[in-house]
Length: 258
Picture 1 (cartoon, rainbow, N blue to C red):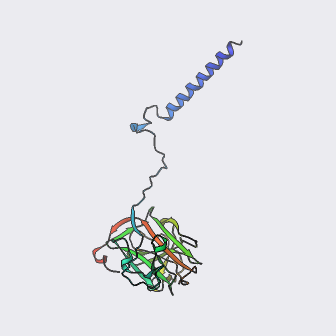
Picture 2: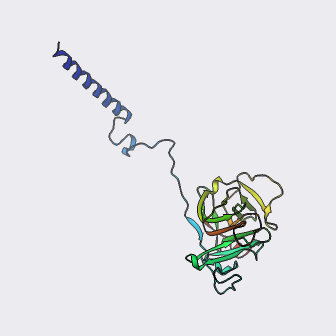
Picture 3: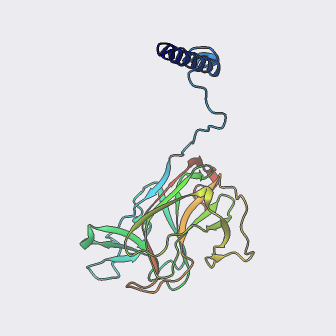
């Protein structure tokens, strides 16, 4: 009887292994290489491949020292000038309070250069425009920026579509005691129209469902507020901005026009 028990155990183990081998063969289609075509493991029916667009623009800003300084020598600043754009393919455009938006350099802080709204006396908007291309911001286009915001201000993305429509988004960069980086997908943003003359939300007070972002002409930012002046009061500062998307050549008649 004692000799019979080990023999039964061995037979049971062999039977189990044989069953598992047959099961694997059935699941693999009975072929080496994982089924039809011999292409290895079959892909999951629900699998998709993410397509990430390239960087369309990145602007770090520079301080044109030929423009007169309107602050002290410790922290020079001047109204944002066309020559403050570091990327030669981009042009900067200002709306609302143009004189109050400033470019600042801090020599005591590794020459960090940024644009700010602290001295604006009314609503303002800064945009960047590629000289030759619109941009397709559909799909997985990403918006990344380095900001420092004070007070109750909330810095928001703004887009000008190729058809002239202005949109302002609900994703924001808010209060921080130092510089911080943040990002969001453009596809996650909810949009409202922007009154470009006053740089305020449009009158219709409704969300724009599924706006066509396949041709965007200008990319910008605003907090829809005036600044509180120098110091730690309310205002927005932006060190750099980066947006990914597919370049779309602009029609010849719109290359230089607004």
